[in-house]
Length: 140
Image (cartoon, rainbow, N blue to C red; front, top):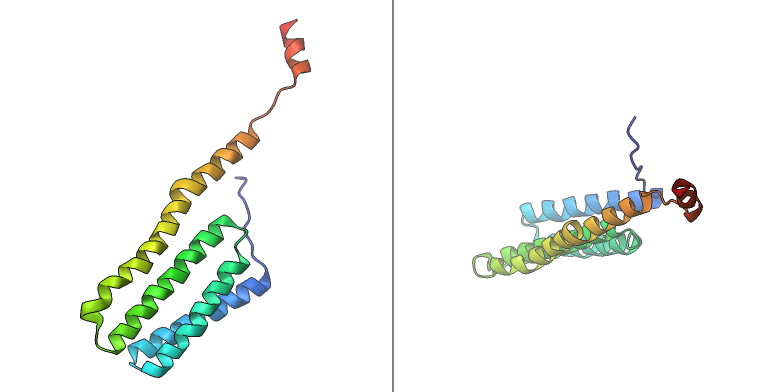
């Protein structure tokens, strides 16, 4: 059997993540149904919960960088929704590329910089260290 790491999160974090999914779906439903006031209002708790999740998982680099990307995704998504509601999406939608790009940058930094360093550190930590005594015995 392969030795694989087990990942788990505390139950209270899972509950807030599930709440976040509900809020995001409600926000997007409001967008799809063109319910302007409710859609804009739903952006606030959706983004707030994304920020709370990011804060709660800040000590785990993988979670931090992915959740930062999600927060910027919601910013882009919310901006797009608002400009579409008010009929400016053709002129202003291009600016969604800024928060989308920042989110992608967080993902790229994690996978291209941080994860390789963590894997190298893990490999280094698993290399057996021979003691000086063992080396002396091998020489005689």
